[in-house]
Image (cartoon, rainbow, N blue to C red):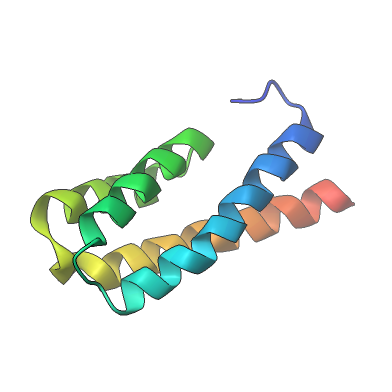
Length: 92
């Protein structure tokens, strides 16, 4: 709904999200001083594409700290699976 049904635009935006996710995964695997900045960025990006569950988990991690890194990673993996399924449908 965010792109008015324009599949090409949605696919491009989701592809950008997937590319960013590679860096986020590394940051979540070894959370350090920049953890809150990473999850803050993830929160905004997730909400921007409609991945509310990921955005909500990232928001909680931003407030409460790196102890939530594995929960954020799980939510990221779930969002990426949904993106893959959407993109597979968009290609057919």
